[in-house]
Length: 319
Ligand code: F6P
Image (cartoon, rainbow, N blue to C red; front, side):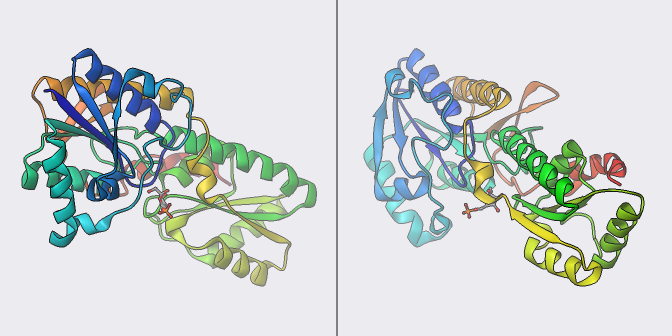
């Protein structure tokens, strides 16, 4: 393998840079040239890329975001959207590609394999941690810690004022980030897309908490379970108490990666590249029970509610 491509796709996740650094430096040790595709799949269509060396990835390990940048390019799924990608690939003559991203990026990687014959390996990176075949995706731990820090701060003011706070946490269709935030902050309630909830029941539990002497109520809402604005409005209307709302949003995607994410990204980026040079492809490299684990790149649909429900018993601690 003489020429390896690497891109970051989908929503950025803290630790993508650390993974990129590992891919570039491991490829360099194998004597290969590395082409970094700028702007993810869109960049592959536009033909925007840069040659990378160990020096070009120095000082990025601790940086949030992705220095390669990323854009969503759903058009790649269509025949018309794939045409410019084909043009760029013809020019680049890549012997292999490492794709750092989520399930959408892995669909792109599968297309690269099947339609363009480029050996491809995936490295899971998304704050949602919704990719089957790995216990953790890069960025989840950092996002979780950002959410925990924010909720801890909100708790101080909530208690001081005796208020109810509805805090919306990211995670498009998957509530793991919200579930673990709630467990780690001792919130009163968590609303998840995987577990049906009723506003009247939520209100009666909150009212019960106040009658037991609580001085606040923290309600964590997963983005996919409902809008914080709706939940706040309904609670205020029913309980006639002071309710405030915080939408954490993209704050959770930024910032310096945690130690956990730096190590995870370095491990996964390194292993993925080693495997590519060993002739493997069409796989995603994850970590299961703290061991490197590979699974097919194809059909990485979102994990069902399973992982969230594993924590369901712990949610009994939220009262
Ligand atoms: O997939 C990661 C994620 O941060 C989700 O949690 C969120 O719903 C989505 O991306 C937001 O996407 P965008 O940045 O394109 O608005």
